[in-house]
Image (cartoon, rainbow, N blue to C red; front, side, top):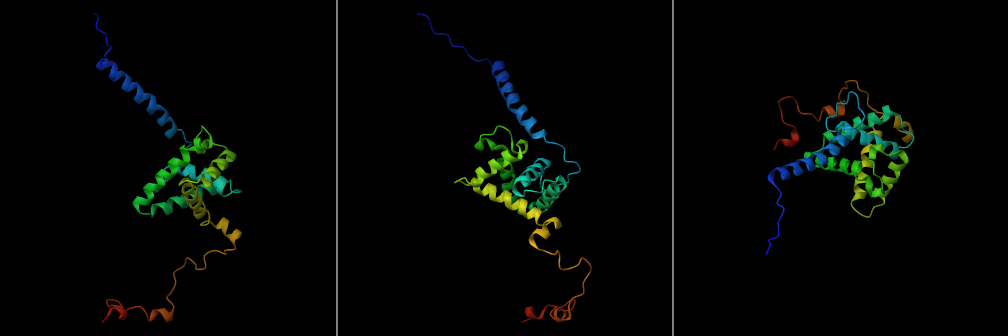
Length: 195
């Protein structure tokens, strides 16, 4: 009787196949991660240039009529400043949010990432997140809230909501006399702390 021959995978072939699989996986990931347009002079405290592009692309849908790149960039700067102040556990969840928005466009049958979609395709994708019966609704709501929060910090938005601007000037102010009496003298405890 003839013994059945088994083709054993040699160690060299195994290393070759594993290396080839790693390259085939890594190259597209590298291309996707590095193929964003340059965002000159971006000095984000939290947001990467790619995440800033996601915010800017979302603003074209969420805040229609404000397609000016300078306005969208300022919104991204405002969002970055806000996220920077959040606790680390919350900000790390926002990294996940940006990944979902950028790469889960297949949920709306698109093969391109979010920042490569047309404005109409982005609107369709965000609407599908918004109408989702799952936690993906939270992704849309959080992205919308970030964009709106960044927009309403800008003076270009104040006229729309009837806000005349900051009511207090940026100049140094003196404390009103009625409040001055409540302040403890230097090197003394406030009266409320004295038992």
